[in-house]
Amino acid sequence: MKLLYIHQYFKTPDEGGANRSYYMAKSLVEAGHEVTMLTAHNEAAMLEKNVDGIKTVYLPVNYSNTFSFWKRVKAFFGFVQKSKRWLRKNHDFDKCIATSTPLTVGKIALWLKSRYSIPYIFEVRDLWPEAPIQMGVVKNIFLKDFLKNTEKDIYKESERIIALSPGMRNHIEATVKNKEVQLIPNVADCDFFGMVKEKDPDLELHFGVKNKFVISYFGAVGPVNDLMSLIRCAQYFKDLPVRFLIMGQGKSLPETKQYVKEHELSNVFFIPYGTKEDVKDLLNVTDACYVSFLHKPVLRTNSPNKFFDAIASGKMIITNIQGWIRGLVEKRNFGIYADSDIPSELREKIIPFINSPELLAKYQNNARTTAEQFFERKDLADQFVAAVEGKSFKKMQNNSIFTLSA
Image (cartoon, rainbow, N blue to C red; front, top):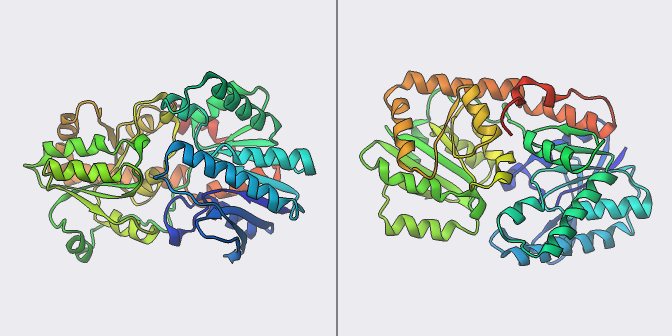
């Protein structure tokens, strides 16, 4: 098939960030399909290039996660308009795959179906507009209704919906009836992130963490990510051999750094945001990874990339998230939940792992085993390809791994 894949934030492993679309598109190419990726970049002109067999079209739409909400909305609709302009001349496709966020990519898919009768699959990475509504960003009742109706229309007109977590699936099924929703979570790249048996001495020296217990955070640093919940815990570890390493970028990073400086948190270190290789180096010296979001019901449904990279590398998980991730780490014994409203709780819960390398190793091995058994990249990519091809699929939502709080 000739497939159009729409992802406004498409990233390759060399660029860092979320690489799910790259790997899914590559799997489609390897299955014999012709894939065109329609995306955006911060350059002044359109660019077309071949990315490992994926024809990739970059439209000039300036965007940064440091933008205000309404400036980001402007970028979202700018991408919609430029995509339509390009597609009026390039619409020879058998099927479209549109992956959110933003929700507006679904508007492109709806338009393609209406104008050129091209069916589409819609992949839900985050629940919009529920997220900005619960965050208090969207307050106008008429705008809320418009966005919710748009979401419902996108779901209803899709050929199939792919959800990245049990909570997302449940929300979609409650929003539209009699619609096939397949659960394909984010992937653990077990080939790239090998199980770390021993830390690399050179990397320990590079990061300045020799003989330290390392808690790392990597990824976006925005209001929803609640990195401050970890930073506030750091003051309770000043007398312990613990280091906090932060590799991130985003709107909240400057104020987070300022807080660390003002409170003289000498056990917190910031590392420049990097590529997938840089994340791999960070994980090599890491003992436990922190995965966090604000306390909003919609954010409990998230399927964060950092979580899957961490367990692929065999790292213990610390989370402040209620919902399916907490249920999973506790059920499979590879992580702990620490209430971010009680910063001292993390100290109490982590001390047994500092004092017992055997206990830490057990949790780390359980993390890697879970990644291999349930989230291995090739297995989930095969399910994605089958979904696009319209074949029957293994219903992971019936698997006991997901019979957890969502």
